[in-house]
Length: 268
Image (cartoon, rainbow, N blue to C red; front, side):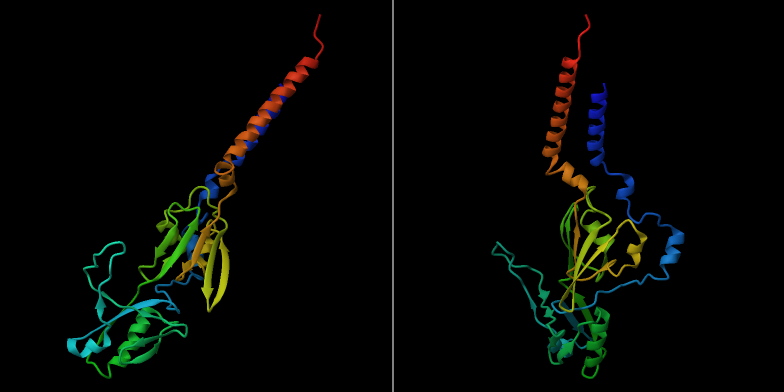
């Protein structure tokens, strides 16, 4: 019986290695109203993305005198739908690409430096320049190519658009279908490019410190990678290996028991 106990212990240990506890899956453990009051002394809300080199902007200028603002707007275009001979029926504004120096070339006004500004700030800057030439201009600025990438142990990996001009790490994970039970919540990797240099950070989704992290609000082109935990190693690619190990242990235990029983002297 002692050998069967050993076998049982081994099987329980293997099964335990493939279990995920509720504590391991919980985000922001211990968060409550009192925690929020403490965090608010450090929390900095971010409502807009910061424009950087490589961003694409659509800028539309309007006014009561439509003809007066025509020279300041790029012409609308229609795009061919990939794989078909049809074209998109709704005309779209062309976009301005922010160059390496952080500038755009605006009709009539020329070179305008926009890197480091937010959308409303760009709109105000252009409006202030136009007011010398147009009566009561209205400027609308949109960031059209902003996105973050979410990879690894999430249900829907891929690119997540920043449709509102900002996105938090929690919102990005939600858009990607949340982490699978096999994602490491205590070690989420974020890569970010700032001024041509790569930054790498790791955050713990279980800690309330996440809310005051500079990586809580994601930036354009950030990459979020959720690495697999040890359970994934057991339950996916190595599942066959673990089953083989269990089978081997069981077979070995059976052989040992058989040999021991055979070696025992039989009573007469």
